Image 1 (cartoon, rainbow, N blue to C red):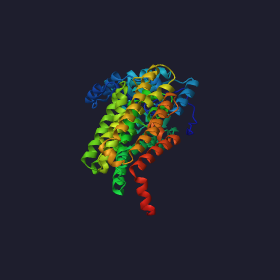
Image 2 (image 1 turned 135 degrees about the vertical axis):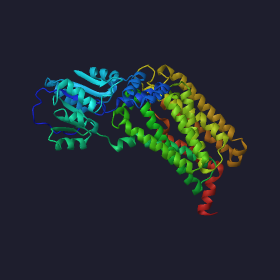
Image 3 (image 1 turned 180 degrees about the horizontal axis):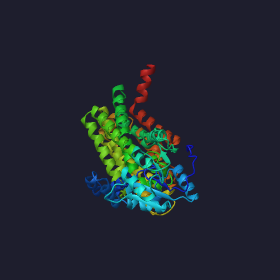
Image 4 (image 1 turned 45 degrees about the vertical axis):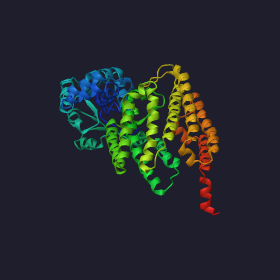
Length: 488
């Protein structure tokens, strides 16, 4: 918290008027309504865009589509402290916001404000109109005002003392005019935006390497193409993660861990997230296009399906798990498209039930760590669903093992792996790894994302390396590499 520059003059009981969006709140209620509406009533929300030229009407329509839980909205602690101090001095504390009355009224009641000024569906209470309303209520120079943007300049200049939030330029202008200014640093950090992009999740894109590993194509050109593809998928994934967080603001705030995410906590403004989303999407599609139309189509499919998952599918029982498995499988197909190797049909059929199992593990972990039997916020499952998820995870495990065994008898399997019996031996560590993941999910001993957990789990990585070593030995690769290094 920054140390405010205090006014030395007595306030003489003047009311303290607080802007809401970006001042008292570390968020914007209109944008909150927009994203909440996209998540719950997307068609109605998109239709509301026809009113965007009439801000007051637009805000009113959005507030009607997606009412907000004002008690969950993140607060700027220093501004709240100033309001509490003013109240303790016996001063009136009011909220004056350009947001709609349907939101400002409950917000004012929750924060025990004495009075509320807001837009009403016809008048957009911003800039000069807000200043006129406050002067009509308190007189010229009859109030102190806290705001956060140059549009508030007219409100500050017609009041007395000024409080600026994350707006040093306005603070300098006001001081130059001889006004007393209290500065609240506020603002956001680029590091928090990077955190919202979840770069640790990029590790999932290692799945793009599976086709070249399965085809035993370790040429530098193939690996470089896959690395470029991984970069495109990383940008695409981060784009969708930002969208997902913007859609899940309320659900995240109700979650014991996700409530600290940058948008849910107010660490990063929603506007910044929206700009970053567009930028990442453009990067993903541009890089994908450089790898050819097939790869571009796969990335576009991945982003479309991911968006569908964020908007609707993740709330549908079982459909959400199938969608998660499909998104993982698409990465494998993308690796084949980027490198130009042929993806084995058996491999795709094998990995899908593996990812079904991991999708169930993800939900099992969430439910095990849940604090009540209520359905998870924004999900279609509650703790009573754990046995069904366990059964589905076990079915996925058995299905994957059966398909892997059948692959060993296929024409491609016999061609790539002459020592067929070693593939059968490899079934043991595969079964061990999958059953271990299910067990850890059942007891809640995993991260909320099983793929990310798997990449950090030393014992699990060891099991996977044993599997890979057996498969390389069955393919004769160890012998080939040893010969090339040491000769006969």
